[in-house]
Amino acid sequence: MDYYQSIASGFQESIELISVSVDGLVEPITLASSMCSDALLQEKKILCCGNGAGHAVAQIFSTSLLHRFEHERPALPALTLGSDSSTLSALASASANDVFSRQVRALGQPGDVLLCVAGTEGSASIIQAIRAAHEREMEVVVLSGGDNSDISSLLLPEDAELNVPSARAPRIIELQIMIIHCLCQLIEQSLFGNYDT
Image 1 (cartoon, rainbow, N blue to C red):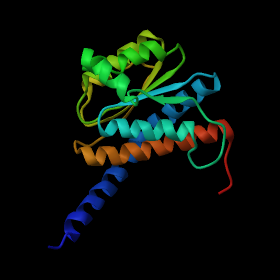
Image 2: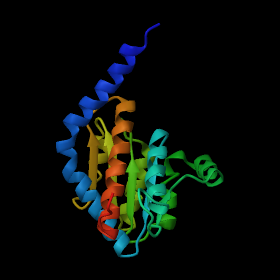
Image 3: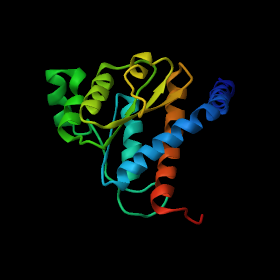
Image 4: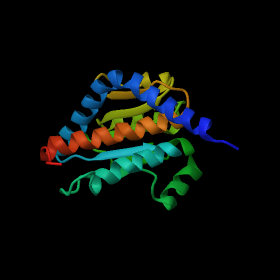
């Protein structure tokens, strides 16, 4: 069986989505990177969350800040909520919708940033996390895909939404990882200057 056409089609679809998305994402990516950089400069932290593949995307972001992105530099305070399986299972046994919000209320402080990675549909746990972040006087950055009007309606003017205009989960995740990489690069440049490559 020849898989070339199927593989090539996936690559082409991804390339086209990147091409049509870049103009609409430049401003929100710039805003989100500034929000994160400003918080870090004020010795605040970034809490991250996401469900399923979104959790993995959130972990890429927090790991790149805590460890490094492309260059050696001091560690930056970032944490992915729900990465501790014991805590996650305990919280989920009480209420799956509160697995992130309970952690936000316990760990979030005014001036911190909550970064949420959402898929094609709004999730009750993400919605609850955003509400908890606002209660804690935190700013919110949301990476979303498709129609997430239930999440968009919760955001305040000082928050940022980076929406991938696609309904296909694999394409959304691919572009969300690119967005994360852009954010990491801009944050590093803002805090530590440009590096010679």
